[in-house]
Length: 356
Image (cartoon, rainbow, N blue to C red; front, side, top):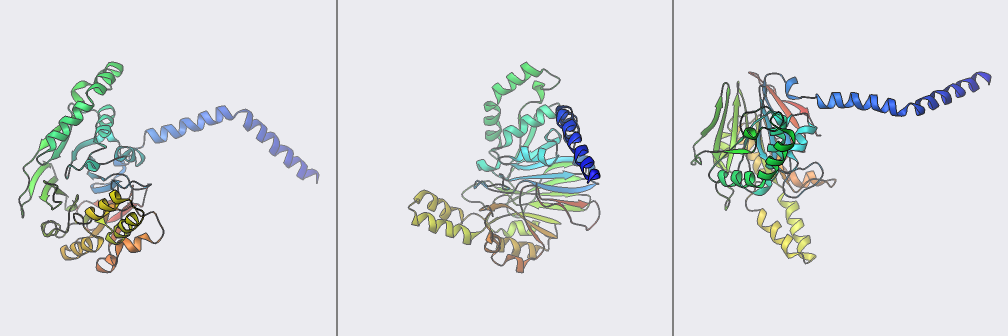
C-alpha cells in the first residue's frame, strides 16, 4: 500500500512539474514540429523517375478530399502542374511539394475550375522560389486571355508585396504568369510543347465540345510515361496516344449517380441544378468508358480523377464504377493526395500515398 502511495505521489509531482513548464515544453515541441514541417521536401526524397500526385481529384462539386482538378508531375527533381484548381496550391504544401519549385503549369482547357487556383499558386511560387521570371503557363489558343486577366487581377498585390518584402523575397521580375501558347493539335497529331533533357511533354486533342480547344498531355521521361486526359468524352484520339503508357490519369463522371441527382433535383423543384446535372453528362467520360480505353490501349494503371460527383457516401463507389472494375482491374479511384512513382527505366508502378 505504501509503495502504491509513493507511486501516485510521484506521478502527481511529475504532472505538476510538467504543467508548470507547459509553456517551455510546448515551445520546444512547436519548434521541432516547425523545423520538420518547414524543411520538408518530398521531391528531394524521390528516386529518379516519373512521379505524380493528385493535388486535386475533384470537380466544381466541392467536398472534403476532392479539391479542384490539379495534377503534380515530377520528372527527376523538376515539378510541373497540369491544371490548377481550387486548393491545389495548399495541397501541394500539405504533400510537401514546395510550390516554389514549380517549373511550369499546363492547362488542358479554360473552364474556370481548371485554373481558379492559378493566381494563388503563382504567388506561392514567386515568394517561395528563386526564378528570374514569371511562371510559364502552357496552353492552346486562349491561354493569353487567362494569363493576362490573372496578371491584371494580381497587379496591385505584386506592388504591395514588393513594397513590403523587397527584392529578396518578391522581385518584380519574377512575379505573375507568362503565357506559353502552342498550336492546337489536329486529330491524330502530337505536338511537343516542352522538351528539356530527358523530359518531353506532348499535347493531343480531346473532345469537350462545346469547349474548344481542349487538350490532354503526355509526359515521357527515361522510359516512363503518364497521360493526363483533362475533360473529354470517350476519345479514340486519346486512346491512340495512350497506347502502352504506364499510367492513364482519366476524368470520370458517374452517370448513374448524376442521373439520380438530376431526378431528386426535379422532384424538389430545383430546376437549375436539374439542368446542370442533365447537361454535364454529355461532355464527360464514364468510368466504364475510361476502363475500356485503358484496356484497349494496354496501359499499366488507370487513375480516375476529376471525379463527378465526389464519393462521400458509403456504397457510392460501386455505383460510380458501374462495372468498370470488371473491364480493367488495375485502377485507383483518385482522392486528394494519392500518389504514384515510376522509377526510371523500369516497369514498376508504385503507389506511394493513398490520400492526404
